Length: 171
Image (cartoon, rainbow, N blue to C red; front, side):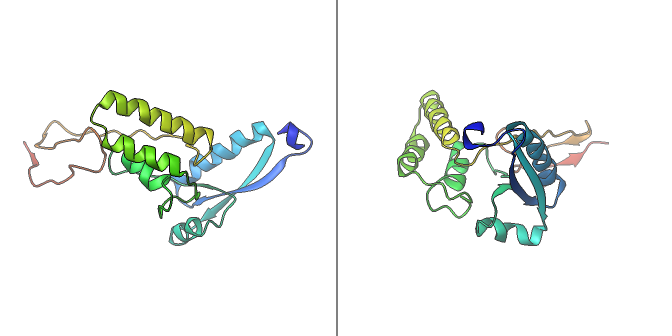
């Protein structure tokens, strides 16, 4: 930042836009606080939910903090949705035909160790290029009473397996 003329006496000004709900606002506030360390003074712009997706789709922001939930814990979902050329949810507009080919390559691999290695290489490249920086990861957990029977918790998703036709209370 100093090479660009910024420092303690001259800070860059910018707006961080995000949806007006706690799960978006809280990390945006933390981001704004951390940006101060590199001479960026940011202000928070909260957007009502009804307007949020229109705003990011139009790319009407300087910096936007967006949560991306995934239906499954698999690289395909993240790569194709958030980074592939032409994806409707690739809000930053990042496009690398070279990496698109690697997305396809890793998707077809049957050797999981080799796939993991390629996925890490892809991730490293995406991070180096600032394609859509990851600011934080959430952790979720499920708690239940011992009287709840028949509930199957999925190991690769928080969304799958929540049908309750086979669940009962043993009381």
